[in-house]
Length: 469
Image 1 (cartoon, rainbow, N blue to C red):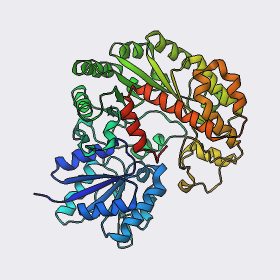
Image 2: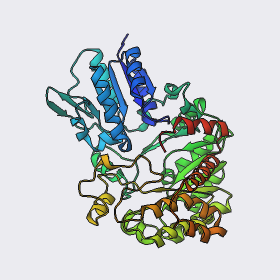
Image 3: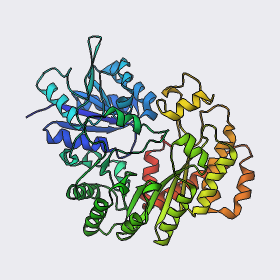
Image 4: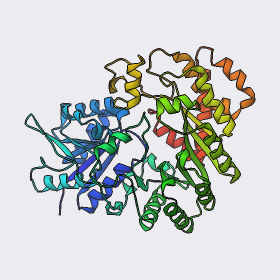
């Protein structure tokens, strides 16, 4: 009986699909899987001593790079255990393996690469040449190629959320991700780079079969709180016949309503007709900016304001509430254009507006533009990223105080349009604690209401993630 064990360390108290899929793949192969939710070095060190893993894994997002490396450095000071980094950041920025405390990185889909790694450790064989892995050994880095994308997607072992049992993560709403891949090329996103990385290795956009999708949904409903299910992908409208079949089957296994994330271009009348049939509680749509210039020239999102208004009209007509995602503080954005974003939301009669101050991620096209136009220094890196996307901009040549205040009153100006002129005056006052507290109150209220979460579960969620805003 194999005894090899991987211990995953996760900084956030949030449901990570990658972690839950790794849990299922590792256990299906007969190996042991452990998970620690912590960003406290002392707790991590103590837990490693107790669990005695053969290897330590961390799923690394770009916004947590600095913190992740610090934790890896602390572990290595005490334990000589291999550390493997997976997730979005090492996939796109594999040079992170040059950090002295990191031994292995996993690029791309990690389920089967991780199983191969554990098998090699268990059998005391070399893992220097496993596809998807870059391995550091004796001052040399073995850069192995990517394996083909898993296709059909049903080959991936059924997700297993049990790794989060008895944690605050399960106070979240049940969530599923039935589609992998995205066809769009937003300038602030890594999707285009990821798609190029996998060119020639199989279809980039894949979804589970209807039968497997229902199993994924049941797996989420088994563990998470009794709240509307969140379909966590913004490309569900690409294949409407498949989506119709999934939602029809969903409606037969539960009376819970659901939340859907959609691109504006995909919210056709046919799409709205389908989701309206099956207890759709709310929809989330990426508006991003109300300025056509910003969308077309800066964000590479090519739709007109009229499309946004038509989408809103279709949803209102079917009594489907919707959230919009918006960004402010973009490079070259004027104050007038920020207010265009607020105003398009007012015209759309958005039920749950949500905004964030733009965070630039190195390696994206919008960062190249920002550097070229003097909004970022030429050597801008992940070390320069802000600790929160909610109230601080790292761009130069902007009025940071005004942008911060615009965020604080963004939602209020939309849900209370009769006070638009008052909020416009308040934005010119120096940011203060009262503005911040007002923002947190409105933000939390709209967030909880959009997902129809129970108050106690939501408060637990907020407390568990108080370090990450």
